[in-house]
Image (cartoon, rainbow, N blue to C red; front, side):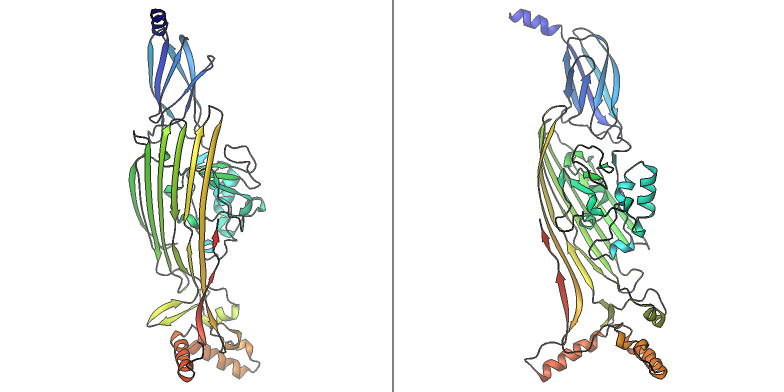
Length: 445
């Protein structure tokens, strides 16, 4: 029986090869290689290699299938009892499935306090649909929403874990900190069409694949200067790719800074970080852990009346700031930081089934400062009693206009501190007349 089994084994035909990403040569782990008409298939290992043992011979066709990539059919000639090496097979990404999404940040998004004007333009940027691409990119700065749906009707997943927040039902793009290179691997499903990670939603669904094994090995550094959004933008990233021992690591950091925007006093200072690690135990089981966040601080500008714009002589007038010790100080400063961690486990059960188990932690630290006052006059420069329209006498209106331009056009920080000092000097047990309060809205999920 031993000699018979050896004889049978010697007559078996073997087919071997390797499957890689045509774009960067990265091995594709878990790709299905199917021997057509023979009901035989194999999955590629951590190095993209596969091996099929069969009794078939002669002209055959193999189909290579990998999610997010175009299917490919390759003809092969198999010789009975011999090993055929087909070499390296390159797969191209699907044009309408996985795209690098461009996050366009405009003035309205930077100055948005509650995120209500975030649009769903990312679907348009990631789709080949002419209407979606044109509407999502061209009109998103004007707060255009495709089909009129708010962002709560677009579901966003990271490594298969749903990340629309439970309070407002939307995904907070600012938590990604502009790290486009770390979150560019995205699968997008338009509207309620079928997909592999969710049931979809009215405005669509998308899944960001941030597993460390999916990043091409190497490092990248970029530095940009512009007069549009940020004066300075610097970023760096590094990835090991999937190593022979089954481990993969990647990390990224970004810094964005602007001394002042179009409105006086509107500075911007933001950091961003990303750390990821994944262990691929075998072609069917892997465990991934990522963490990211973007501590950000920015000055705000106010919406004022036409009367104030006319008095200031500029549509870019901002009443929120004033000079203190020769420097501009903004009374309305937003501080935000959303530290996030995601642990996910993936089990490829067979060619048609996959189980993904994930746990995510998200803590949103959001605060906004504002001037407060107690038993004192309103310190805001655009307070209506400081404006000419509060008087009916033309002479008084001229006097108020002149006084506003000379004394009340911006916040007088020195005067506020002096009034607090005088009040405390005369009444040591008394409270301050003016203070800067910080309003918090923190959310833990």
